[in-house]
Image (tube, rainbow, N blue to C red; front, side, top):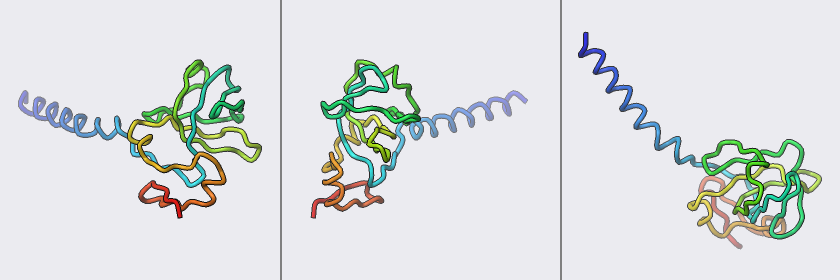
Length: 130
């Protein structure tokens, strides 16, 4: 009986150990609408995007490096490298705080004009300049 309990505990520990690295390192996929920039959180919903005044859209979603949602107020005073999308009114709708590996993916468009001219490979999560 004790051997069965120990075997089950060891099997459970092995499963948790195998799953933990996958949870810690999410492989996020960005859309062709995602632009790159530097976002400074002042007094949300007021923010600064690439040094210019901007605003978070109502219902904006901010995902941390672990892909979990973060509240804008918890980021006040921080300046972060992000990928982001805009809504139809030009407000920031989706924000992904980038991991070091995601920051290293270059080139990545910083404005809509670049995104229109460049080619996005969704499978490779990479942009190329024509």
